[in-house]
Amino acid sequence: MTVFLLTLVIIAIALAGFFLGRGRAISSVTGDVRRLHSLPGYHGWHAALMVLMPAFGLLLVWLVAQPVVLERQVLPYLPAEVVADDTARTLAMADVRRVATGLDAAVLAGTMTEDAAGTIRAELTDLRARLAEVGVALGSDVKPETLQAAQAYRTGFATAIFWRGIITIAAALAGLGYALSVTRADFRARNRVEAVTLGILITASSIAILTTVGIIWSMLSESVNFFRQYPAADFFFGLTWSPNFRGGSELGFIPLLWGTLYISFVAMVVAVPLGLFTAIYLAEYASARTRSIIKPLIEVIAGIPTVVFGLFALVTVGPFLRDYFAEPFGLGNSGSSVMTAGIVIGILNIPFISSLADDIINSVPQAMRDGSYGLGATKSETVRQVILPAALPGIVGAVLLAASRAIGETMIVTMGAGAAAKLSLNPFDAMTTMTVKIVGQLTGDTDFASPETLVAFALGITLFVITLGLNVLALFIVRKYREQYE
Image (cartoon, rainbow, N blue to C red; front, side, top):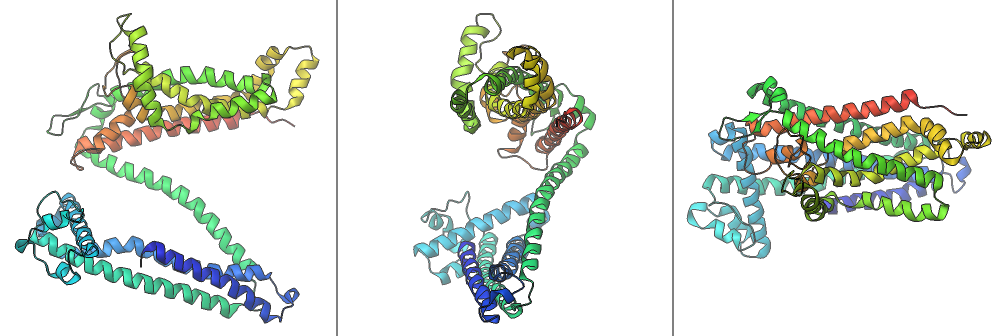
């Protein structure tokens, strides 16, 4: 039974439990619901929750533990030297799963019987060709030990699927039986349901926190492995970025930091004035009809995928800057440059800044505007001397958050700024950022244990610290200098 089908069965049992629990509560007081401690609906929800919680909890634990258990069952079939090496073991298990999937596909297609799938031998047949007939492509011939491991994997997987369905449904029915057994007039179903709801809310909050902790731990642990192989001083203060998987790499961080900050600076030069002026116009000058038209049109930009912005930078902005600015003034002859990526990232950030600044400006009390007008100030004087100073902490916070977003942009930089890691003041030179190099170092056929790959995690944790610092600074500014109005 697939996970989807099992989920539908559990939901069906929970739905039945809702009506059974509700009906049992009403029948326990012979229809006089006033004698119930809790409303009938609470009794129904209690029964449904007693079905869903143990069933889905068990299913989640099973899904997490099943791959680990199956791998332990399969490893004895693989050579000892493969099992001892982490990378080789991971690749071997990927081959095992791929062959097992191919055998399942062959059985479903009717080109192989179930018995044949369990007894076929790699040395007696061209298994690679037979699996290719059912659409499963293998990179090399199947080794005998890989086939034996795949057959054991299929057997263990089928057994796990069978018992997963039986045990999960049994847990759902047991939960339903318990809920019905405690359903009576004096049962505090409302208290139980509200406690469970509170637990769900706390769990949701905890997941967000634990996710952040997991991200930090994953980057930090691999970064420690990197710095064990590559000197930290050379990484943080090196002026050359030249990774070489054959040895002799120079992994200096400074050129990537410079490219990141340079492109982000250009982006903020574009985004901050345009976004702020747009917010001032929409909040203070535009009529309600004009605002209702312009604001949604601007916010459409926020919904455009960044890869589309990358294409815009590659096809339109880059060639335009090259033909009309870079080449005529002898500054370069490439469409990929800091200016190209910075301008497009700035356009991407305009709706972000304008939306936040608009909300902040609108939060300034109308009484301050009326007082300024009463003293004889004009509209522009009120905006410059009253509204903007009052909204300044929030606006600064919005700008810093936008800067964090600009620093973390990847796709636009990849397509618009090139991949050159260098120190240059020429805005029409091709440069790159930390995010681009993180992607580049982790893609392709690379050795995951090499410093050239692990450097991506060092870049990631450094980028995390930079953006976290900007976010904390933004929150500090907003909280410390925010005006309190009555």
